[in-house]
Length: 131
Image (cartoon, rainbow, N blue to C red):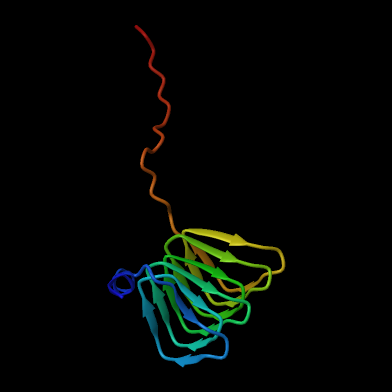
């Protein structure tokens, strides 16, 4: 029992909103979140969010990464990867680090790619002439 509580406290547990479940209000979690039900509200997670084929979200999303298979009407901010599967339908503006869209996915909105931080930027080549 202590180990289970410890995993939940650190966010290692996977949170699941099952098909047939309807939540009205915001959902906030530290761990991964799988949504197969309906959420009318904002979703915030430091980890990965998965919206299953039967999942529906109507609200804003802020997360580490997201995989969408279902229907989402939201403005989304993702620090890493937003992945849209062929069954996905997304209406809203997105701000992402990386974006992957499979053929067949529907997206209506604007996309902004965040500039990645380069650890070792390439210096411009300068030519030095010997005298």
